[in-house]
Image (cartoon, rainbow, N blue to C red; front, side):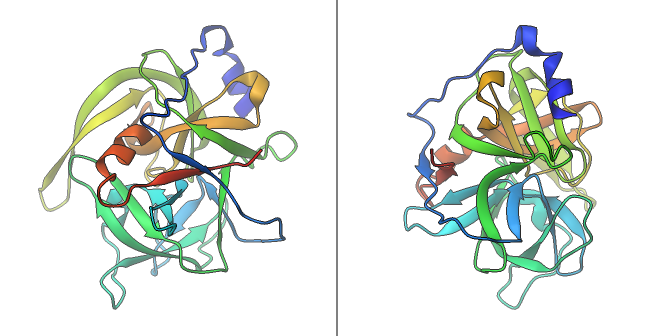
Length: 261
């Protein structure tokens, strides 16, 4: 359980403060309405074949106010392309079979040096939100609300992540500025840089899901710090949002959408 797992870290929690110089946020302007197919951070993303590829990350906008779902760049691998040459992605909630609720195509991805991807949101039967899935606990913080984006620069900071396979898992930061390698089945090796290591466990399919920190007195509001990229049952590495915002500044000039208050 999210709260129970988090409590054991309470005596040593360190909180990262948001840094406006490296993170850009916008308040969500979404109107209140009844929508069934909400895209929550940590939900699953499947392709046209119905194969789970990754987890949903965060709602972002570019400088032209176009909406995207941020996820891991390597999610494109082993998926068929649509006629335009992109991989189409669909929403898959926790414990759900493939739904074919269309989100959009992965129109931009990087899987070398910095691993991230942008799914262009083009369909109205799925709705981007500023919420993170925690629905294993419907009576207490079923949805965590993204209040801000921030950066982490200390080992020992308490963090959590949400992903399709492992749901919400919490742990601590163990390494900063991590360089990691990933080898494909064809023998090609990718090198990833500027990641952060944690002791949170992951399973394939969690990649792309949001990583966040929080203050117990501010729940259900949380601060997002990155998206999961790689890991195993004992660790997870994530790419910080500050890095993604920096490397996309010239191409997209992204802003993270946060919950209005």
